[in-house]
Length: 304
Image (cartoon, rainbow, N blue to C red):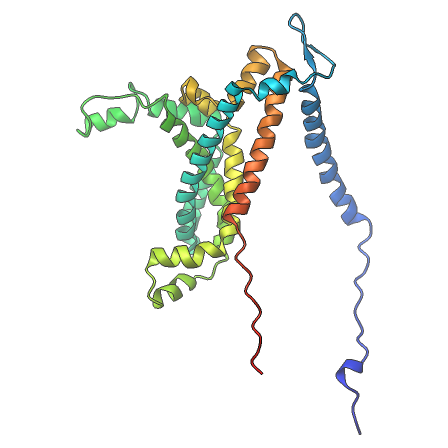
């Protein structure tokens, strides 16, 4: 008795029951909150940049392009370039520390990871204001680290490292490092622990195996973390003003100065929109460059 071929047999698919309106309702309020708390203020700020400032008052509704033209003048473009370079430098240093730290952390037993994760979370709880003023004390001449180095004989006289360029970058890395580690931790924790060992059995040194085997597998997580750290650092305000000289002040410092000190909200809004556009473009570029897709392998044609 011949059996029917497997392809002719009817396949009964089990239909999933309707979930009802609850998933749509649960997704509705985050969408509404995102619209109200992000898109509406963003549109308001973009429109405010076209308003006309009244020196004796506040501002009046109008449509002028003077604020955006001033936001793109040579001075503010130079400040924007300084802001981008500081953020890129801090992002690069943060990744150079966070990537190997997270990799080594995830290779330890679960119980041994807990103290490090608690330390990372504790440092993440510190606000930018606390970090800025704490590092200003640590890098000062009167009560800073240089006094400790003088006491132990490594330096002759105490010096002040703040305000300065490296003081700003150091504080940026300090506030961004916990964020980077927590962003990379889920991806590194899911990696196969035997991959570096397999690379070692093939004759690759540990560093070469890490660069050639591990990093390509986590490049997208590294790219997303780089973009996140870059945007986070680019919007910092207290650290550049506290630890930097006027030459190191970033665009957020000047935005606050225009909005609060000079009472020029239309120009501050225009500067904010320019900063948002520039940070978005550079963040997308970072993701594309770092997580570049490998070339697709050509399909092999079987020999006849």
